[in-house]
Image (spheres, rainbow, N blue to C red):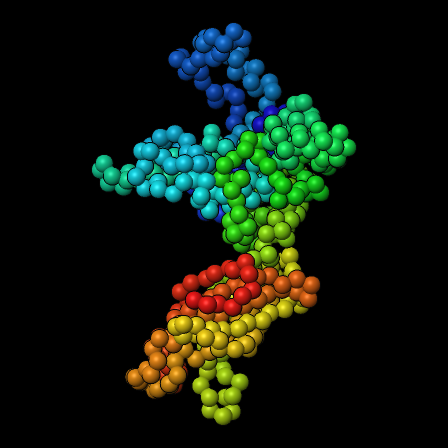
Length: 442
């Protein structure tokens, strides 16, 4: 770590690598490490570069020059990050477009891969403006002699959390524009520069230069940009963003606290500021991308008693869904409204509006229609087996906003073992998030 920004670089490398790992990406295992300069030894073959660009033997004065700019703890040690060697044999970086010619498994152009396009939101969240090819690494992981597969890593997160660049006007632009941004240049030329840009008003926050310009007040997830144009980021669609937003919604405040703990920050004030910025930027991302397409997720089949139990009716199946808008805290449970309708058969025919219940504040359950037209206590002949396909559309929203539906595809099959009087047993076979409100037709 350098003197000017204190523990920012190592904190970013450790915390952000874990954020990406928790979101499903391969990253190096990074740890904060402390060491005393007395343990360092110079390899006789090590070299340094002099002022003329020539290679010269590495000597102690070269090491001292580096350590003179490094942050020291009160006990005199230096704070650094240690990175465990990745699994596999490195074969170079991967790109954010095209495919690898030497990998027969790599058949989807990278700019069309949802995980790379959606990772733009992770980069925006942490201000990973240096998300480019040079900060990736592919490795060949051998699974048997001469056989294996390529694993793709994202590496080097030391730019995150407010890296300060000189001159200051350049540093203030990071995350708001490309290094060379023709669109902003054209707008400023046409408007004679009268438009106020975020970098015009950006200033250090309460941590001073430590977290630099990493803040939440000026953060807007939609126009966020890395330093260099990223082909995959530029192609991120609303669906890509909603997919990643549903992943980010799983990061609770407690998760953020635990992630920051891994950075071993001695300054509690710095720790609290970092938590608040991460929390608020997360919420801004979720407000923009989580609730436009449906925030409902994680379906499960439940068995609830029928409302007509007094007349001897058997229990019925329900499909239950988690409302991530409530789980993530961007919407209050009391403000949420839900509706559902079902279709069944082939071709699909309307099965009417469905009853709703809410067993948990962040969960909504929808009563499923009968998949078959007969009931039996054991085996029975089905008079219309093609009617075993059921589709349920579920809407979530508030009085002022309604998202597009979540469309749950289910297959009804067999006699339920736990309810022999009920012929319908269901399996979820697909989810859709339409960007329209038309009824299901297939």
